[in-house]
Image (cartoon, rainbow, N blue to C red; front, side, top):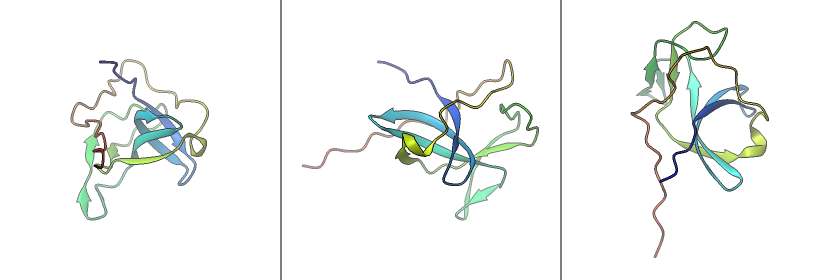
Length: 100
């Protein structure tokens, strides 16, 4: 099993970081990043030790998984603080079921 290396990029649609968890062809599978405790009336995952360099506020990851074209993301990955874990074990990549 090949494990995808997760990382952060700027999502141009809202000009905020996104947590990229997988890629499918020319598409990234990602979770939006916010500082809000809730999104859409649902609680977000909280990461108190924000891994993004220069931002010390608690980071929250929106639970809803989204997909969008790689063209809507920054070319370069966001620079992270040294020694910060971004594995987020509670986030699992959800593969779509094939329709019969």
